[in-house]
Structures are given as C-alpha cells and as structure tokens.
Image (cartoon, rainbow, N blue to C red; front, side):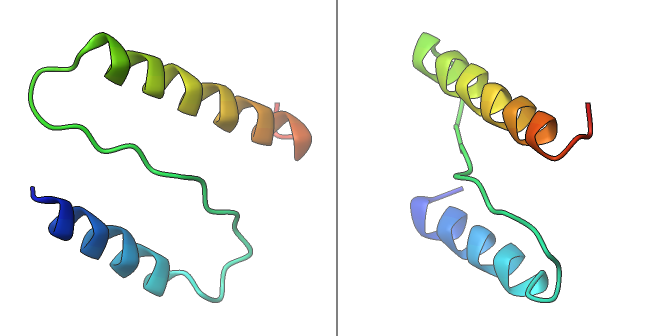
Length: 59
C-alpha cells in the first residue's frame, strides 16, 4: 500500500462515519516486517485506546 493509498483509505473511513459520535485517533500504518519503532508506535496506540476506554467508563 502506498502512502497515497493509505491516506485515501483513512479518508474513506472518515467519510463513512459522519453521523456517529466517535473520536478519531491517529492511525498507524506499517509495511513489511515490523521494527522496534513500529512496536513502540503500536504500544503508544494501545495506551491511547485504553485511556479513552477508561475515560468513557468502558473498563
């Protein structure tokens, strides 16, 4: 997937949810074998998701 395709995918998903009350967080897209940086970015994303779930009383 090229950078342009990734951006188009994110834009398409955003366009599909205009009537939902959701908060969008920055996506992380990686290609190929994950590096230490990729794993760190995924850990950060997981922390953000966990925090948002706590803030909204889901956990």
